[in-house]
Image (cartoon, rainbow, N blue to C red):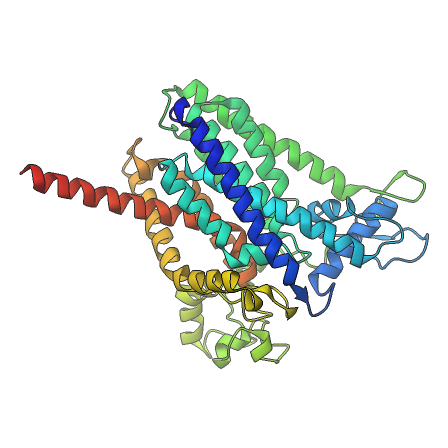
Length: 447
């Protein structure tokens, strides 16, 4: 990551400047943003689970009922409720709790930008790395996430920190850093369950491929891969312990009835994801405020033989595009839920950034896809050095996450955490293109 010690000072200055700028944008947004309903939809679930964790030490969605402890468990990932519970008091007051959470999420969002800079600097020069992180800083989706009580901000921060740490260990043959990075990535799966895709995709790469900066033999690779696997095992064991027990009012570990109604087998997820949503079959918009049919987000009941063209177009193309759509499903913009007031409308700066990123959204996506595919091709040709050989791990992580997401759900909101990775991949393409043009010009000049 840090190819030259003389670059530490400029790198540190870039990190500080980026954090300050990112926090300024998020703070400005929070100053004028207000949701139409303070706590709603998924936020209610996280708020309830956080209260039960704070009050009873139980991971449950049972509605608060005085001093009576919850009697059921939930399959909701525990990480974000535990995070929320740090800001609770008794009795809970959302008007006091939410501003504290928003401030913490603004800080986490700014740290995400710094992690993106450090990760990008593993592959490209500092100026280009700063550009990639700058895109994360001005991303209206990431700015808006600071306001809402949802998992995305915490998960994205852990994802980017874990990736930056893991890739540093991979490039420097550091078992300690590889272990630490994998540990963070595994724990991020307790914030967003689909996050377990990331360490599962990354661990084989840490084990089997060279990093490209410092020479190492198979023994070192096995040490790094082994550390990654141990990290995954530690987190898996803690998850099983958490899923099996809960604390009652007396403070004892008590097995509770578990509610796994939302869980499906892998084959059920895959089979269900192949069915296009009803709005897609009907040719309607995915945005709820423009399409009030409450059933339109559900999968169609019609079989392949009835609408083969819809099945084929959905699975070959549309499902990947909807998962990356600029407009979120509920509000039709960058914000997750309908707003009583949006700073993107009242602030000229934030409004301009939203417009800019809307223009850049699909071109950056296309560049990221090109970069990821090219990195995989380079790997298959067994090239062990060069720019695209080095970005192979994050390309695999990105594609794996999008593939997993397309199976679980198509909602655009769920893809926001991997926007930073796409910006890094896109920046890598831009850097490679400009480098190629400069070399071509130099060759022409010399000839």
